[in-house]
Image 1: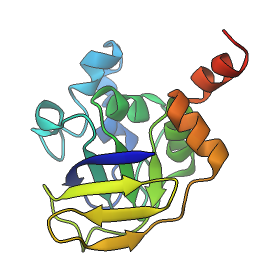
Image 2: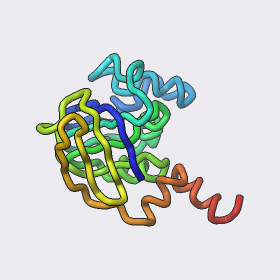
Image 3: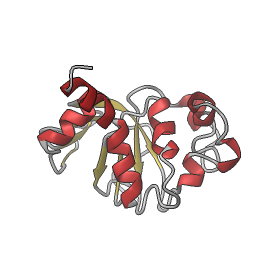
Image 4: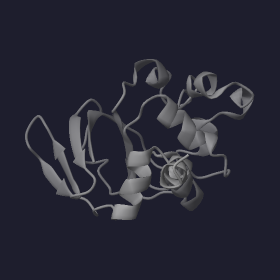
Length: 162
């Protein structure tokens, strides 16, 4: 599974209220996504492109268990989230909806706008401008299968022929 896009770099403790603000929770997913990360970068939702990669610090996705936090990123087309660490519930919600999440600390090495290429199955990240490379923990085949299917429910439907 290959993902390539621009880096969007954020710090520590990006919580679910920043990813899916409570005041916008009654909106459909497309409307809610337009408010994703606006408290830390008002231009994010307007400027992020399909395949772009969020790079963040520690405890990404802390807070409530709302799956809309991961859904907002996926709705905007974010290709993956790389963070030093994740809140457990956010991590699982992301995998369940088909959003790749990788635990790695890159906030000091990657700048906003850097073009990155990820190979999740092989476990690699390359910054395209200079070939800088970091190994990632390869994702297990069963997780790759969930991600390639578009999420856990899509995978189960595919397996059951629905």
